[in-house]
Amino acid sequence: MAVALAGSVASYALWQQQQASMDAIAQLRFEQETHLFADALQRHLESHTDLLQGMRGLLIVDPQLRRAEFERVASKLSLARSHPGVKNINFTRYVPGAQRAAFEAQARGDAHMDGSLPVDFAIHPGQVRSEYFVVDFLWPREGNADVQGLEIHSQPDNLESMLRARTSGELAASAPFDLVQETERRTGIMIRLPVFADGVPPGQREAVRFLGTVGVSVRIDDVVQALRGEGHLKRLTLAMSDIGPSGAQAGSAALLFDSTPKPAQAADMERVQEVQVGGRRWRLQFQSAGSFLSAQEARLPWLLGLGGMLITALLTAVVSMLVLRRVRALGDVQQAGVALRESEERFRAVFSQAAVGMAQVDLHSDR
Image (cartoon, rainbow, N blue to C red):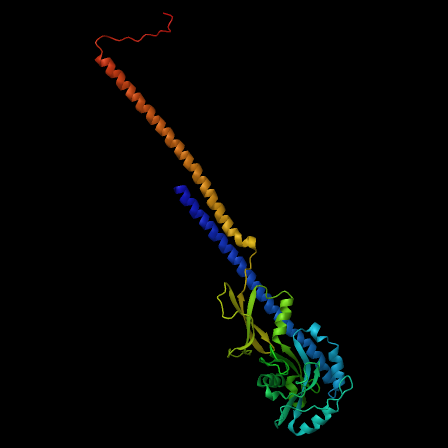
């Protein structure tokens, strides 16, 4: 009983220790996978900066850049292949309110790369304002027809990034908004770089003229799917939200992407991480959606526990056999002692009750 109890306790302790070790390994792999995705997401979005800086350089060198030249350069960027998730690259032009009619007339006469004219170009929605921010140049044209001429006061989150880029002179990402050219999975953001006529840094801004911003329109679902294709988000679900400008207290979260099951289910592991994107904070909430251990690793604690119990059973059997053998030996000795005492008692009884003497004769002796 002592051997069986001690062996069972030791086997349970071994199982528990090994299970804790496997849980720690799974947790480490889970955290590594979330770190890898967050880093890949940030690198993916930051890769748009080089793209925008190149396009901004064109406009700084030539503020009178023609539509066809913008489209020719943009067409060589291979956006679909090199920048998955980018729906278009555009130049959103600043137009003073008094110049609206002249700008629209000029835009209608500025030919596309294929030589056609945007004869239907008009600022929309058509509200009268003191200043306009209008999507003027755009590539690719296919699938983005509704975007050209869009006045972004109609998209407050988009407008906020425009004004922030103009004020800071730095890269600015918008809060999520619905992409007008999409019918499903519409959540997108705009990442912008401001363009000033001579590229003077922000400290001397009062002496320069703001032309607008170059930007990329990004659909978040496509970005996440592209990263999945690179091997990220294995056995993970993700809820991604925009929680406000960097340096400010977190406000109400605006959902960017969500792959968690509905209704929500309790997960074995969870983790929250923040990333900075163009002056805004994104919160990434990860949950495990599968085991981070191989089948062999998952079985290891049970195999060790069962192995300990088997050894315990064998030791218990061996000890039991030894105990039984000892008990039998003690029983044999006890029976021999009882038989000897009984023999002696019979001998004494016969000797004391005999009427004549008794003699013991050795019949095999020579004498």
